[in-house]
Amino acid sequence: QVQLVESGGGLVQAGGSLRLSCAASGRAFSRYVMGWFRQAPGKEREFVAAISGGSFSTEFSASVKGRFTISRDNAKDTVYLQMNSLKPEDTAVYYCAADLSATIWTITGAYDYWGQGTQVTVSS
Image (cartoon, rainbow, N blue to C red; front, side, top):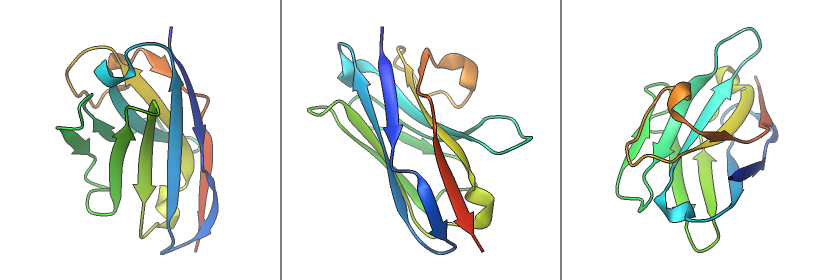
């Protein structure tokens, strides 16, 4: 069993930055692919970014590529999402997720564990 707890959300003006954190509990964190997803009101949950267990591979959605970075600290069982140049359309609840396979997936169904989410609101 893996428990995930996100933090770092909040209200920021357009053009600003936020860093989200996701702390994991459970064994073998370094073996999990970790992903970030987001869900805006009335919309489907969508993929944002993911990182492989050893940080060798990352994947980003087209809408955030070049603005967001994903990283992880396996010694702290934590994954981060650095969000720069934020836009109002980035407003959503952000979720981290853990995938026990070794493949980076961009679909929600591939992930085995989910956090409770953290709200990010970007004002114009």
